[in-house]
Amino acid sequence: MSSQNTQVFSPITEEQLTQLNKITASMSANQLSWVSGYLFGLSQSGQAQPATANVTASAPAAAHKLTILYGSQTGNAKGVAEQAEAAAKAAGLDVRCISMGDYKNKELKSETHVLITSCTQGEGDPPDDAIDFHEFLVSKKAPKLNNTKYSVLSLGDSSYEFFCQTGKDFDERLAKLGATAIEPRVDCDVEYEADAAAWIERAVTAMSKDMQSGQAAQVSVSAAATPTAVESAYNKKNPFPATLETNQKITGRDSIKDIRHFEISLADSGLTYQPGDSLGVWFKNDAAIVAELIELLSMDANASIKVEEHTLTLTEALTEYFELTLSHPGFVAKYAELTNNKTLIELAADRQALREYIEPRQLIDIVREHPAELAAEQFVSCLRRLTPRLYSIASSQAEVDEEVHLTVALVKYDAFGQEHQGGASGYLAERIEEGDEVKVFIEHSHFRLPEDNSPVIMVGPGTGVAPFRAFIQEIDANDRENDTWLFFGNPTFTEDFLYQVEWQDYLKRNVLNRIDLAFSRDQKEKIYVQHRLLEQAADIWQWLEKGAYFYVCGDATYMAKDVHEALVTIIEQQGGKSREEAEAYVSDMRKNKRYQRDVY
Image: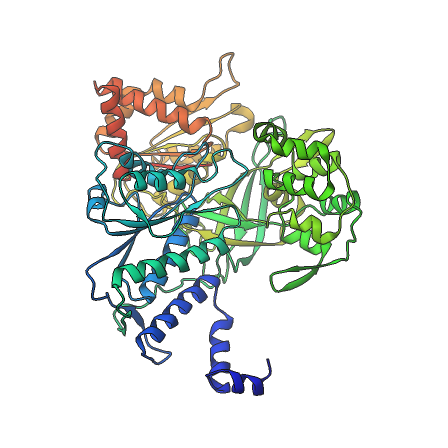
């Protein structure tokens, strides 16, 4: 639109439009969403404020408060909740945003307006910070909620059988308790941002109308309540172009695992992190896979593809913007439809058979088995957008300053006569070199050291040891007095003892007080970390009774469940408790942040 046309059709002047464009040009999607809600609130109240004013939304005349509860494992559900909070404040609502792990369940009976955002873990399980709230809702203690209005946004991955199950559970249970859904539940797949933004707009609007009973939102200006300052300009949407400084294999030549230690420079980024946080890594797909897909489907590598505001060649789009590693049911269904492949059409109709087919296959395997001829736009329509991979940070900034360290297992295996690699792990380990650029961001976590000098028990087999290296570095660098105990496991002592020299040094200096090792293949019978825990049951119970924090990091499917079972058994047997009492003890630990898990 020309400036002349702008003056004719726009209610703002050309100078105002220029200023507005300058202000919004550098904003993230989250910031734009907040500003949009704020301006809407101003328009409703008829107020106009200077652009430099600090904004806070006053509570409406009605006594109602909006409570936003989130259950988040990787930070996505928390991020959506915080966006909803900003929109609600901009609309003039009295709002509180809180993790389900910090929420007092007894308060639920007094809530009149509730928004819930939650992800789902593994086989339909709630994230760790939502476990107690989830259990409370299905218990006899759950109150009647006949005066409560609510809406649920559920995050999930349709590749998994129990897609968005936790959000579905919350929705179903709230309804059974008598609450009224003011907006229908929304189930979001991996690409959740647009659906989440639309849900926020609808849900906040509905809540605003209901809470304020027709009264206009009141937005006031106050220097006392400024928006949270952004520590760095870099985030998930605007990642930092960091430098890969070190790529070191830390397993032996004969190990069945290829585990790498990466050191990445964050110099001049302004990014800060704490032990327990994760690093998000944006990766590029393997050029060989991109070329093979284009050839198998007889596509034009230079065909133009529109991705958001970018116009790219097909090769560029497939390299940087679309998921080509992880297969999922949606891809098979759409690909079958476009290619009219009867075998895949029948497979897509059988949910269980489809999941069994997908499980061992990457996307390239499916296309190799069923090549076809498609236009570039058709193939791209089958694909998900690329999502970054999150890795537990293996360093403390108190020790490494403007670096961040990762401990990553390279996913590399042979299947169907071809070598396969993980998307991000292959990119970091073999497709870029030291000195190359890698785009990263920090994802903050609930996984935290105690604020005081309470004892710390850490269970981290394999790459799950990463955050505990960060914990020990932090304790060492700050001369903290926490007693520390590490349980580590891997296949063999000689090939797989990650960071062995470091642990030995920490033990010698008494920074690490105890270490128990479980090398599963060094003897005839397999020994894992849960076995070592049970062997040390008496001492573990003593540590727990002294207030020890118990941390678990690593595999969610098997290890974390086995460790949880061992923990409950130890409390039951050593504490002389019934099974129910031991479970309650663990639940109390979780509520008090003394039982924390970073599992994947």
